[in-house]
Image (cartoon, rainbow, N blue to C red; front, side):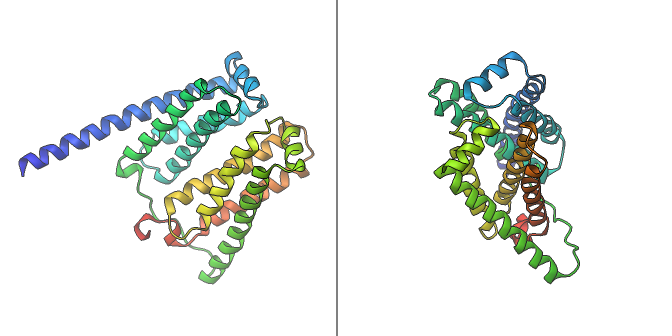
Length: 266
């Protein structure tokens, strides 16, 4: 019995050590990267030029990163941590895919390693940083909550699914819109794959943790689209669509049934 306890203690300590090593590396890289992005230092500006992305995306990514670091390091906040891990994974895998798309295979290794460290930190985090608490469910009536949930969810799934398929197929209007915003055409495929997978995750029964990542991705995509239109000098009307669907995504996220949000019933 004592040997079993000792082994369990050693295993827990080892898990904790590896968790903090991976988390510390990710937090440091994210924090430093956020500063570099917000300051738009020559190094990151050169990378963006090579990858074909607009310079203003550095401000968008920098703002997301700087908000994510304290959430990643703070105790508790398991649901917010899911969104941070999702965002970091999207950034690193997106960076790796971007380097591969332009033939820079060697430069894709770094982002890929950071993506693996992100997953390592996510997988090894302790229960206090992992297990969700039930969300507040008060909303008029149960029937009203369910109806509103499914209406907003249908809108979000339609937006993600149809938009993702269009991005993957790259018809002329999608390509023109992407070029207008300053993004490389290959980004359509990266974005489209994420959207389609997100639509599927939102529709699937249960899978609450996967849904957190899908909703996070939807919000990052839609607010990023609005910020991109703003940076490109587009009229305010262009911001209405992305922000409206971002609102639908938040309402769907907040009102989803217990089986789609709480781990205890998944």
